[in-house]
Amino acid sequence: MAHPAESAFVGAIIGLVTALIAFPTRVGRLLAPAGGAVVEGIRWTSETLPYWAFILTIFLGTLIVAVVVAYEFARVGYAAVRRAGPRTKRIIRFVTPNTPIGKAAFAFCFTILFLIGSVWALPYVIGDLGENSAVSNAGNFTSGDDPKSALENANDRMNDVLSGDVAAQGGAEGASDDERAYDRPRPDGDGDRLKDSWERAGETPGGAELPDADPDRMDLYVQFDYGSYTHPLSQRERQALKQVWADMPVENPDGSTGITLHIDDERDDGYGGAIGAEVSVSGERVEDVHQYYTAQNLGPRRCHYHQVVVGEVRGGSQVGFASAPGFGSVVDDERRAYDGDVPFRVHVITHELLHNVVGEVDGGTHTSEGWLSPTVDADEAFLSDAAKEELNDGLAGSGYYQQNLC
Image 1 (cartoon, rainbow, N blue to C red):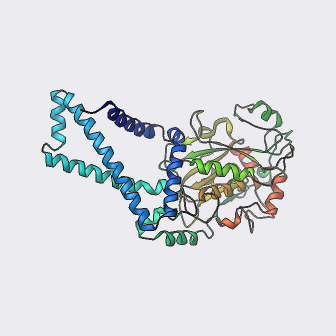
Image 2 (image 1 turned 90 degrees about the horizontal axis):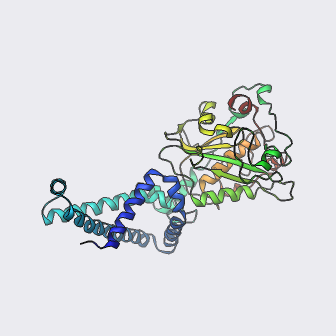
């Protein structure tokens, strides 16, 4: 007979799995604090123990969890079967072994499958551990690479991953001077392309909400859309991304520096979050960068919110594409390890958003140093003087987006 506590334990697991499948983003955010604690524990273990001891610890920990879960499910399942009707019992006997040896084998197979599933999912958990973790690039475990070699190989692939990521003139090939012309909303004291009256009201005339807007400090509203089988921003990525923009050396009318980044990736208001389809672009067509910047995906937010679509970026080593200037970008879902203070995807997203709001710098779209250099390098995690000068003149706007896509 299963105890009430055991039944509650099994019910909680089933409920949690069901909720994660139905509402992955929302439930993931609720579990973020606990998940962060687990990740920190794994990272501490990986940095403290020898490699073999770390792997053994992970295996034993997973094995213990698997055995406990299997045991509790077996007890609750047995109690439920005993109370079931004759038809249900016949069905259960038909799909499960009827002998003690068969039941033991069934339980053993269940445990092994649980272990395999846990190991398969482990890279998705530890892939965001950080640059100093011995298992940061855990996706390379399957290739037999030791952690040090995996990290070195990942760093070797950083070169020029952002060199061909730009659709100039806001994504319009051969755009005319008229299409490039941008009609900035005025008055706009802080230069963030949001009219002061809109920021005070917290909403545009068209109905796009501007929560926590400040007419005396630059605000940047970004909607994240996720293709199928991609990973939403982790709590660490969200915090790091906001901090990076808050630290931008941009002067504001209120005397502060930095840009307030607002992130929306939930479907509570009908926008942001899962697109409901796979995203795979090659960047060979300029339209690739803004094909998801539509009324269906953004509604009244168009030309007020930026959009970052997370999906697959095909071809070569490219990991992102963006309009320069503009409002659209696509970044790859891959979360590599590199020797930086921010996660890999945060570096890439910052680079692409800067293309959106800076446009051209000294006649080009990339700079020789800083966030807009064509490589993901920890030494380039700063805003170059040239890009800083452009931002202090106000966020660049795209006439092409304004006239053709909004």
